[in-house]
Image (cartoon, rainbow, N blue to C red; front, side, top):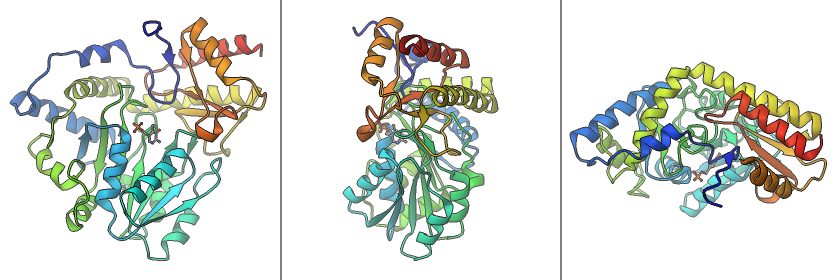
Amino acid sequence: MRNAHSKLFTPGPTEVRPEILQAMAAPQIYHRSPEFRELYAEIQPKLQKFLYTQQPVLLFASSSTGAMEAAVQNCVGKKCLNLVNGAFSMRWHEITAACGIPCETLEVPWNLAIKPQMVETKLRSGEFDAVTLVHNETSTGLMNPLPQIAEVVRKFPDVLLLVDSVSGMGGVKVEFDALGLDVCLAGVQKAFALPAGLAVCAVSERAIKRAEGIKPRTYYFSFPVMMKSHKKNETPATPSIPHMFALNVQLDAMFAEGLDHRFARHAEMAALTQAWAKQHFAMYPEEGYWSNTVTCISNTRSISVEDLNKTLVRDHGLRISNGYGDLKGKTFRIGHMGDHTVTDVRGLLATMDAILGL
Ligand SMILES: *Cc1c(COP(=O)(O)O)cnc(C)c1O
């Protein structure tokens, strides 16, 4: 069945265009050569433009989870506040704890957003010097109010704000400098629409200073070690060069589309999917915080999500996702991110209507 491709409406990995796959197949170059440094130097300003930042954007040869680990290892001196309202924000807490870093959660029910006021109250204790926030919770289709939370965290000058925008970045605008973020990371298999295996991570000067001032907890993921190479347009270890070829091509494609157009396209795909969900089922997350890249639908009709997906794959070459973890069967998720079009989404929804007899 490996060659019968199903178009991925899963919330990561998502569908990758043939041009991108082609770019990855280019002959390899040596990573200590002028050609490589040229490639690195070409990608860097594009990533900065993409994240609305003057700060460095580091590249990790890992999936997003590696960069999540890097963020807490480099940026927590005293104690980390992990904001939790879903599976990935819970994972960030587990990562922090597994690294032996003092931490505490602020958890709300997973269908609810993290509200800025709760964060402010917690930070007033003065215990914390870093906060982790998952911008777009892929497990629940919920987008936390990043600008408002960032504004609150900025009232505490010693607290660094570490943001996972894995399934947000590339689908919604993230203005790293204007929001005053300290780390913002993403794996490229979500709204970047590249194959998995590379993470991008913007880091503020404050984040690098913090990392320089604490006892190193990591080598492979050390910001100071990476910054030394970054200044020479290199990475400390062998990078994933095929991914960098693809990223360079994809960033050009994003600018050719226009970032604002790209974000508007995501909003339109989301609105269509949300309207469908409300008409036939119900939305899982609290209203006002629905994600522009992934819709999580409450299975109010008690359909078999597994059977629906089997039919989609077998008869239509399309694939969606079941609910994540404990939400499996109770919810299902449609990813509408990356290079999918409004027409693609309309087609998927019409196909599901036909299968479900809606
Ligand atoms: C997918 C995802 C992750 C984990 O990403 P990997 O690339 O599998 O390590 C983390 N956070 C969010 C919000 C995600 O969507």
